Image: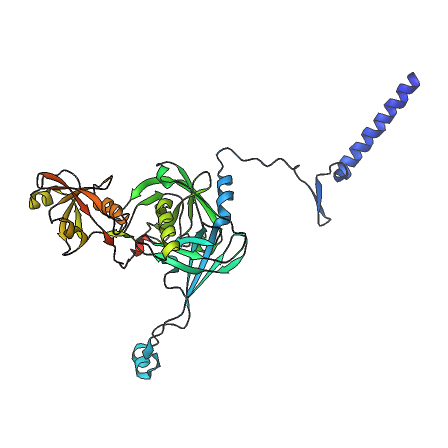
Length: 386
């Protein structure tokens, strides 16, 4: 028994001594996690761990939506002054214009497996060529299906197979304080995800578009993000990023997105008929003020006062007069000009709709049959856009 114990203790001593020598001189022999860098330096790597999502991380939402967000590069042929060939003109005024094409950068969102893409009108306006780059590296030529300058939206189409598609959310259910992500290609550096919250809802009177009902967010939006996606924590599309308020050209924490509810209506109209058809009644509306109420002799506390009516227009034919205060369109109450414009634009031309009015101290209702809204030219304020 003593001999066996002696042999055991000697063997343990020898093994411990060998372990000490190897651990000192050749530690990589003992640890399979050790790696050699160029055969010169040995490092020890941490063992692989199961991939988990940190609490509060929005990586799942970004991963879900990012494949459907594309980069859009546009080019427009250079326009030279036709008098550049006149030597005297060039002597006095120099070369007017350049022979270099104009290029632009923006983003877009694939909303259909058929290849339809939502983006901003100002991203593709006037472009001769549109190149669409997917997040997986594929390229395709983009074709403009239709545009809607009054909401600054455009619909493109590409011809590729197995396209990733974003899931449309419900922007009407958004609340101030909800977390959102902005995905796009700012400054052309590549797809970028920024986070923030919904800062405000229903922003209007910004002078950007005719129809304004913006989602305001502090998620960083920069030049190149135009037309990109504003998504919620579930990775669903809530808006199309369109503009920023900036004095420097970069993000200042005030960005604006077109709600997906508006974008969806524009998409459906453009795909169906190539253009957006809106209702129009031919009036000049103004927000009700005590001064206007006194001028026209009305006793209304809310609504939109009509200061002008187009002769032979839909409103005039229905009996609307200057000084009338419109308080409702169909089932919707209207309290300001933007609400009236939005309500009337949503009407189908040719279908009569009941309008609630106040004339003087009397309340009345009229059936107005809207016509089709004429096209208008939109100019975006340069200090508010990308």
